[in-house]
Image 1 (cartoon, rainbow, N blue to C red):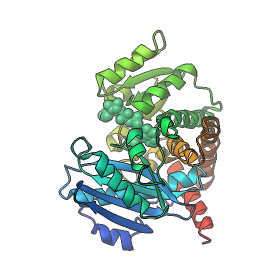
Image 2: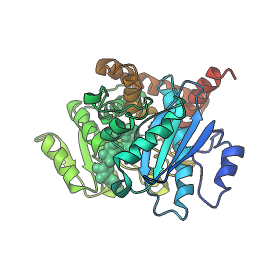
Image 3: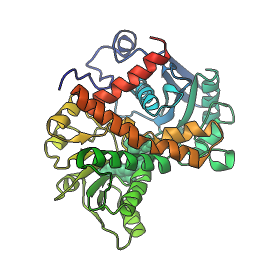
Image 4: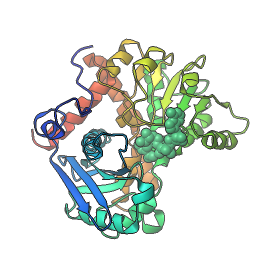
Length: 376
Ligand SMILES: NC(=O)c1ccc[n+]([C@@H]2O[C@H](COP(=O)([O-])OP(=O)(O)OC[C@H]3O[C@@H](n4cnc5c(N)ncnc54)[C@H](O)[C@@H]3O)[C@@H](O)[C@H]2O)c1
């Protein structure tokens, strides 16, 4: 394997200062970063626009405290920069007419989130005049976007009652399933998943629905989740189907005959320890930022594991909220998400031809699309 780029991550405090990264490093290059404050409501937010080459930046709003960080504001800024950059790549690969952006509201949503704060946040996004379109992310929900939309016309991911598309996990799960079928096609010569054993780590909104697709396709499914209730709900939803639960991700990875590992919980699922004991030939899941550090994509490729880059296969949700901007049509959005199958196959073929891991091939395609649109 040659020419492995560093992963898309602006790293921790030991590295250069975050402003240095922004202005001088390859991982910066963002078009615009805005700090917002509204003292009466306690709003402190960062809005990062990485690129508008393909169209207005689109990406969700994370509401998080960063309580473990030495400097929560700096941690939030780094997160916003990384997430916005990731959205540029995700949107480009999904063929959307959108650039990448993301916002972070700093604070514990349980304590801080109020209607007034969300309305103030909407005014901040609106002040950008449509360069950034916001939606849900960790810590924000469809009902929050309904509130934000009252002060900001550039809001999507709203409830069906407000003309929105509702929960994005429906099409995210469908897209990951399409990515998995493409993995099977590339590796085993058929997209069929019947008889395959798939391990799903994290059966929340997306994982739960993914299990449904897998059962329907005739796969054997092994699940795990730190929430007992989430596991119970999945088992109850599929009585008599070949779905079983194991205690944790370690047990899931050790499942005999595991064909596909699907991380659907948090980021960083693919670290050195996990990769070294992976027996599954395929990794394809919904979780964002699965690679724990740069180089993991190469280790996976060297071990003969086919890794479907997360931002390639989990774009169903953003396709859904982008569709909402034109008046949501479920069938139209689903047809677009179905294309993840073809795109994933194209990326695998390109990776093979160029002798690079799929993550590198995916980055190149996204970068080419952005450069072309920017006339560079
Ligand atoms: N919802 C979407 O439309 C969407 C779109 C793109 C990407 N994603 C990503 O997909 C992932 C799942 O999203 P979601 O909406 O289903 O979130 P969710 O919070 O509903 O589900 C995540 C589940 O993972 C479980 N979990 C947490 N830590 C775990 C661990 N160590 N081991 C096993 N289970 C663990 C949680 O209990 C929860 O049930 C996230 O990384 C998210 O960023 C989601």
